[in-house]
Length: 450
Ligand SMILES: Cc1cc2nc3c(=O)[nH]c(=O)nc-3n(C[C@H](O)[C@H](O)[C@H](O)COP(=O)(O)O)c2cc1C
Image: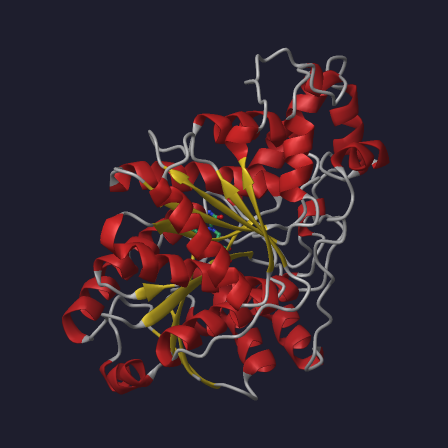
């Protein structure tokens, strides 16, 4: 594959994003052809128009400036729209940052791609130091090395791009368990036909598929009694735990299918959310690959609202969301097939759930609450203490004060030294950690284990 990596950070060669992106070539450079270029001044270099035309996959790279892309990228986007043929080009986005509001630039780049009819693959938000060896202050959610996050995400992205360009499709690894969650409040011939079609598709990839209709469970809504905070037990006696086990136990890929209503999927689906987030907070739902397939009469804004909401939940629950498929009317089958293939590629590449602003900030917020409400939430306090979220954060050793441009230049060079050393030392193959290790364990046993 021909891969064009466009680095937009104003720091050019001393950019940490650039340094992190070099790790892609280190790992994939034998099978793929990489070209690295800089576009930091808001212009796409004319001498690289040809490289863009020839690229199978474009990786846009940037850091974050004040919760968004750099100003220069606004001009870069106009320049690209004016001078390049963007339609149908596969593109993704790699950022490094302090994980502070990092979803916002990712939304901006996705919208730029969608405006120009590009085939956009969800980007990766790396913490600025996460390709370096693990440091003591890493949060439990960052227990995996950032290199693993980078490599599995890129393998997944490449497979999706490959499928788009040449139609080449891989099969699911033999043992993959797929659960289709039918969230429709009422059964119709049309929605059952869609579910049967999704089931057939997964079976053609070699998956073991089961279909669960959420409406068949006796589920009562959360009444906010707070027993789950104090005792980690839900006071409502109904079929919630059974539904939870049926949906998540042994599941590798979860496909939520339903009618979008007010930016949400259905009454029963929201009941599950309201009651299962308690488990997400304690990492009980491990690394499920999730696909949403939405039908009904809904607006783009409703889809965006749904996406934002699910991204927050995903961060709490250790999900990797492969796609939000708009399966309205005529577009149904093309979009559905594409979404399904993304889950196959995600599974085959053992993709990691993303670490991002939501993951960090939501966990920190719940950790802080567990201190403030200690008598009320003793188990949460114990959990967040044990898992390290309440540990003091330590200072990164190469950081120095900066008072002038000269000092800044010196400091920027110093920051990149560990990256160059790491790149030099890194072996060609990186051990990828086994995923979904707890998937056979029922929720009651997982609760006892913590
Ligand atoms: C002016 C400025 C604004 C920044 N704003 C954010 C921010 O809003 N959120 C964040 O997570 N990181 C922010 N950062 C941190 C950078 O995104 C981060 O250090 C990044 O890794 C730098 O990458 P680079 O060396 O490739 O430019 C900011 C850095 C600077 C210099």
